Image (tube, rainbow, N blue to C red; front, side, top):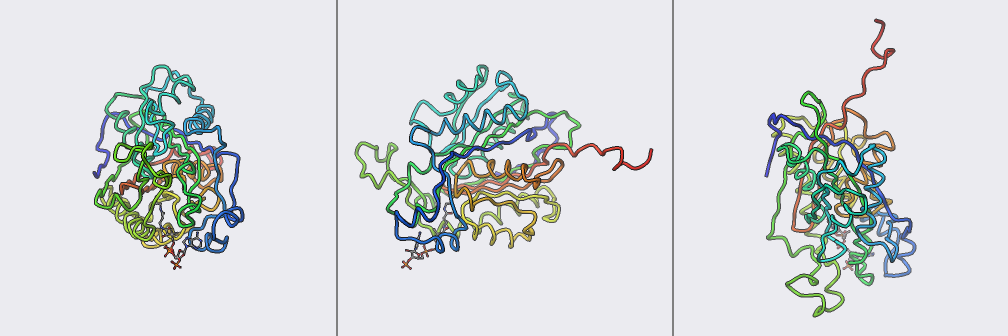
Length: 348
Ligand code: COA
């Protein structure tokens, strides 16, 4: 699905973003003591140095609530003004109830619709598209979108090919209606899926295909054909981003910041080089968070903002990819450009 925003009377904007990672840090040195691996191998093949792991009593909704509270506080938003709470997750608290109603209840979003969506590591981009659609068709004015994951509960800690990759975290974004003359907002999306490749990245059991109570423990963990996923990711980041930019008639050189799903630094460096986006216009934080699936893009966006890398008025390209295999790209103008100060505007 390729969509360019086409003059709807209301435009959806990215009104804020916040991240949260659990306190506990798991370093590569600790992994060396668990499986047959080395810090050198992990860093050179993935770029990951450490990741965060949820405490035993923390579930996906707990991480989501932390990120949501930070976002509401930062943006000065009253939870009662939220029309919808969407939680993108591939690791929900339960089969049911969904995680979003738990989050909405705890933050006091009493008049919000609340629903989960699962597009694995593309979940945040799919969620941005759905939030934008809700706002631009007039069904909502404020949508709280949270990507939240506790992937470490699905990691096989004896499998060195996967256990070094994943971490836990949550990222929250506020998608709100902007005034008609606003210059910021979402410009378009490219979303897709290739179900023929579904078996390349799975948790084989725990659903209706192989219920958890009948499953071998290892089938309740992440199983991946790393090389195939690697090939898919490097191809799809470039393809999806190019398709969307061409549709929007935006040149690669106009992109101020690219934030892609943090899965592997080699994937990211290869794809951004192919796209021709210079390093200083790409933000990565995989070295400190690992792969947090649907949480990775909002966590990275918030960090980029905090480090002064995402600035008001920036044109931002976001790209996600993951199990399904799914992908999604989005382009947004972030916040209105700052009004010129009297000095910068020159003498009156
Ligand atoms: N430590 C040490 N050695 C390891 C290892 C680890 N953690 N994991 C794998 N190896 C070994 C393999 O066993 C293999 O050894 P062998 O040649 O004796 O069989 C060797 O390293 C090379 O394995 P290979 O799978 O070819 O490595 P790679 O360079 O392809 O890197 C991944 C593996 C997983 C890092 C890489 O394929 C990848 O990042 N794929 C995409 C994964 C991803 O992003 N998934 C999520 C998408 S949302």
